[in-house]
Length: 288
Image (cartoon, rainbow, N blue to C red):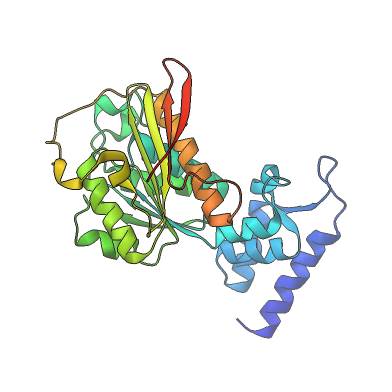
């Protein structure tokens, strides 16, 4: 980008900075339309413009309700982050929706399955119109509707011990939204080899579990025991899950992801969160 473009963009941002504050805010904001205009002017990505604005303490209007909870510098960190979500169904749909609204700059979406009618009870991205459509591709379209700045990579495949390395390589964090334990062990092994933190989540009925696993941690073995105990469930082998459970567990997983990316707060490392919505029972157990 030439010096003239840089100056033009700086001038446009300075004009926004000089505007009187909105009555509801004590900071400058920039709208989606203004971001798109400046991006076109400088041949930049939307994220580049958002980051440039945040560096001048101009908050993209879509993130203004994050302010005071997530600072300008932290919002920049999220925009610069890359997260892979493995599974785009019940847990995954909620995770993807929340990460997109928070402003994670790059999202990798992985799922080889298609939506079916029995997903309608709980899977946020499933609608009557997209039955038989691939879940990962539908998730990418949804992200585009929520936050057009986000860069997505889509893998409409089921993971295996070979493909998963290429998929997650270079990401900052992996979030587990799988529906079986055997694949979860494959994913964890790949995360350890690639040295990527891993946010585990699982649901069944009105119960769920969450844990944050770093590459050097014992991880899933502390929760499930040895991986050799588990074989992949056959297609059609279904567990009961109602809508509230994945929505809640996904929220815990996303908050763990944000804490890891921003290096703040207390994470569930070497711990597992156990939630029972039937009895409103929430416990945190220490792991080996």
